[in-house]
Structure formats: structure tokens, C-alpha cells
Image (cartoon, rainbow, N blue to C red; front, side, top):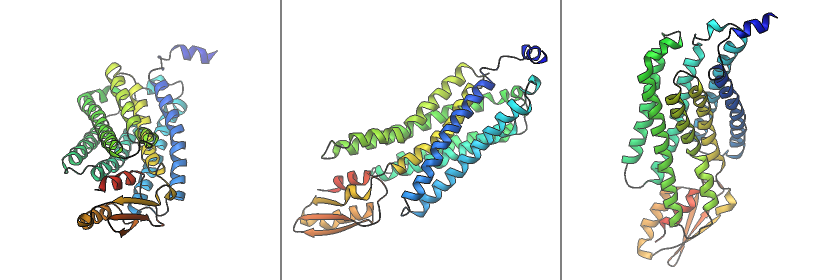
Length: 320
């Protein structure tokens, strides 16, 4: 009978340990998805640029470390200190450290998407630089919070960093929504200028793979933190955000078209603009071999796969 008696003295745990448990569980499920996507990427994209492979490797390592840290925190609270409510106010060190790992993971993935925006946005550096500064500001705020939190041991003491935590949370939402909105706009602009409307399924797939889910999760994080700052509901969304970052990167890379989808592209250009058109196309990729017959240009794909399906749109836009 000792168990039920002790249980009656435990505080409600639904919005604290319960939220933490759900966050770890959902993160573990998404980690399995990202692990499978990582394996698929390295087997199917052997000809990718070495820098892109390095990025995927770094993201996968950070993903694994982060999942291990939040699992460790859940184990300490729920197993090691089981039926010991006095330890619930103590902050496990991995909950502080995982915040920095999550922020570093987000910085890597957001840098990738900012680079994508740079390659698609041909009107200067203002937009990519602004988005890059937002991502860097978010990382610096979280790193500052982690540095100050390392000296604090209880949740009550952590509440003294409320303003810094709120700023980092808002910047997270702003950066996620800004990057997602920029990508969606640029892709919509590219798709709408293409000659065929058959790209709609690819566009919807691109929307789901490039920031929409992370933006929704960031919005839920802000709402949960504003509604219940004393609970761990927002922490659960923060856990899941890390898994969505890695999955969005890998899903984008793995969703690229196969070589058979764009073996030959036929462009019609004026003979006097041949040199400039060839320069624009060659600047996009070195995976195409160009040949001219009169005023017509043929771009033939080489054996090495280009880096994504958006290349077809860029080539179509380059024709005159």
C-alpha cells in the first residue's frame, strides 16, 4: 500500500513530466524517420557535392546527440528519481545542453535553406543576408541563454531569464516563417513562369519539405510558451522542432528528381544571345552539355545527377 500513499503526495505531472515524455516520444519517432532518410541519402546520392554530404553528416550527428540528451533527461526524471517529487524542480544538465545542440542543428539547416534562397533569388543579396542574420541572431540568443543557465540549478532560478527566453522564442518563429515564406514565394514564382502546370504535385511536396512544418511547430511553441510559461508544453514542441529540422533537410534532398526525368532540355534562343544564354545555363550546373543547331539549343544531362528538380525550372526561365 506504500505506492498509492506516496502517489497521493505527488503533484500533477500532466503538463510537466507528461509533456516532456510526449515530446521525447514524438522526437524518437521522428528520429527513426530521419535515420532512414540519412541512410537513403548516402546510398542514392553518391555523386553529390562533398560539402552537401558533410552537411548531412553533421546534421545526423547533431540529431543523434540531441535525441540522446533528451532521452537522458527523461530517464533521470522518470526512472532515477521515480516517486521523488523534490527533484522535479531541479534542472537536469542535459536539458540545458540539448538547447544549444538544437540551436546548432537549426543553424545548419537554416543556412542550407538560406543558400537555396540565394541560388533562386537573383535580385541581390539583401534577402539572403537578412534571413541569415535572423538565423544567426536566434543562435546567439539561445547560446547566451545556455551560458547563463549553466549556473542555475532549478526551474525557479531559470525564470529569471524569462525575457531572454521569450526573445529567443519569438526570433525562432520569425526566422522560420520568413525562410518558409521566401522559399514558397520563389518557388511559386518559378513554377508559375514555367510552360507546363504539371509541376503542382512537386510544388506541394516542396512546401511540405522546406519549412512549413517547422514553422507550424514554432508557432505552437510560441503559443504554448505564452499560454503556460510555467509548464513544459513548450519544451515538448522544442524537442520536436529539432527532429523537424533534420527531416526537412533530408526530405528536400531525397525528393530530388531522378536522372531520367530531365535527360534532354530543348531551348530556343536567338543566335546573337547564344553566348549570354550559354553563360547563364553553365552557371547553374556543369551537368549539362550544350549543343547548337541553328537558333536552337539542346542541353543534355550528363551521367552525374544535378542537385534538385528546380533546375528544370531555372533552365526554362533562362530561355529567350
